[in-house]
Image (cartoon, rainbow, N blue to C red):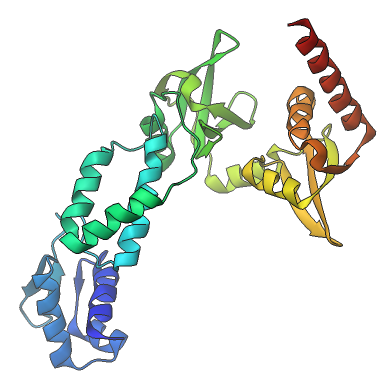
Amino acid sequence: MNKSERLNDELLFLNNKSYFNLKDLVERYSISKRTAIRDVQALESLGMPIYSKSGRNGCYGILKNRLLSPILFTLDEVFALYFSMLTLKAYETTPFHLDIDKLKQKFEKCLSTDQNYKLNKIESIFSLGVIQHNNYCYFLKDILQAIIDEKVCRIQYKKDNNIKEYQVQFFNISSSFGQWYVSGYNFETENIRIFRCDKIQNMKRDSTYSPKPFVYIEELIKQAFKISKSTEFEIEVTSKGADLFYKEHYPSMKIFFENEKYIIKGNYNKNEENFISQYVIGFGNNILSLKPKELKELVLEKLKNTMNYIQSV
């Protein structure tokens, strides 16, 4: 490990510490005490707020009123972070207060003229495939904070042009196919439910129920997409069908490669017939076999209704 690599690792090692001794650096990095002292001086010059504590048990302290200790990134790492940031442009809302243009300016200030030229050149020839998120989610940041704080919330949720109230404990935010979703434990029904974030009309903290331990919620998640009256299905698809699966699938489904065959296995519950039949139709002629018979009949009925509709318009 050369000096620059060691200093970068030391920044990470010390970042969450309130104090440390030279012995910590000597033992961790197999360096001399003199080298450890020089490293501390180098870390100070990089901006890490280190101060010495004198006395019999003297050590080094690190100020707590800092934002983040500086971390050294390679140019490849900076480029990777930069283009990851650009994917946020597709979102109408994010859980963070972000100004993409200001973030871009910060990236550019960290780079030399030549490096900025390379960055802009890559941006002009590199395109990222993302799905545009058009629906504004007013409470996305509040949802994230409630998950972090492990708090119960009372929400008003718009469903079929009606407003319904739920008391929930959120635990997971996901982005899928142009929408933000949040999973939550419904205290009224005592099960897991998925909400579309833009349909949450109002939200506030609620103390009626005590938060559930995450271990309890994790156990419920295992059963959330598999109930006693669910119907299991298997779809054999072509390799192109496997590509379609990876682009769009849901937690109740998994794909397996068995005996040179791609098999999608999953289950659907009562009242999800319309959803599952529409999903299966999306594979088109990439379907090689479909089980059970009931699902095949659902798909055929869906196609028939679609044909009748198209003929009528």
